[in-house]
Length: 338
Ligand SMILES: NC(=O)c1ccc[n+]([C@@H]2O[C@H](COP(=O)([O-])OP(=O)(O)OC[C@H]3O[C@@H](n4cnc5c(N)ncnc54)[C@H](OP(=O)(O)O)[C@@H]3O)[C@@H](O)[C@H]2O)c1
Image: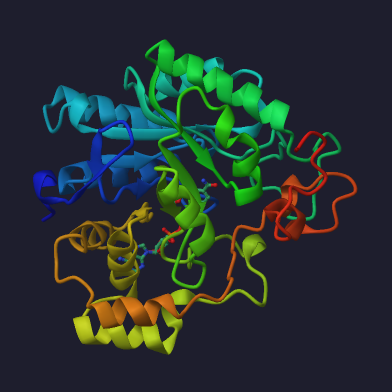
């Protein structure tokens, strides 16, 4: 059961490196233990996944690293054929190399293929804290602080610890403030994308700058923690238009969301610990594509349905979570934007 990794379509990054068009998420959140997640990673490697989205703050890199080590030792795959992504968490922005070395040690992988700055500011909160909790040290995005973190990532490329730099949870105003300052171009940007939250403008901006969009929550994260759900959130896969397309293909709506993602050009990183689900998610990339008409219908489902609002990162004086996303076209409260 699974897919020959050589049959999974590939995407070429701005360095010329080819990567699979789909990866697997590893954020078990409050629901799954590190062991459950790492068992799923082991199964997913056997099933043909060659790209994994990890993060220091997911609290399971150690266990996932054991799975990688075993897979390399047993010859299931070679390190060079695996594309391992991880992220520096907000409390380590002044210690990026330390964070990167710890992830490499935990993931037992010699180097990181794509290293993301998880959030573009150093605002820290304890994992699993209530959305109403605020850290008094939190502050708005600063160009100088962000570039200091980015420069440390550039050093990691030069030292051979990472192959590519990635951005995450960015906005166009923030990108505009830093885009001409990079010495090493970012290869990818991880962002929330699902059918009811397509972020078309940001998507187009990234593509125009040769930065690959990587889509987190590609299924609309139907099982995200209660604390992250508000009454106005829409369940993407329950929409009648979406269910009708799934029925026409005889599959779960999740598979349609992934086909749409790959055909549109973002790399989805769906999460599941269930073998049937993660295998069918990978298989979605090699089975019957969506028609142009179906793609056009899904394009109309945009509903500005942002699920990761990021309230816990707000600084003193910020109005509400909208301030994090620069919706009026400028960086809110930024001390040093042009
Ligand atoms: N950069 C960032 O700030 C950031 C933020 C959030 C997430 N991420 C990354 O993105 C990954 C994915 O996000 P996510 O897990 O929140 O959302 P998601 O992938 O949209 O949704 C995951 C849920 O969808 C269900 N599912 C998966 N495959 C399915 C299938 N074939 N059929 C039916 N249901 C299916 C599973 O539910 P059941 O468990 O009930 O089966 C699973 O828990 C994370 O693991 C993480 O790596 C990054």
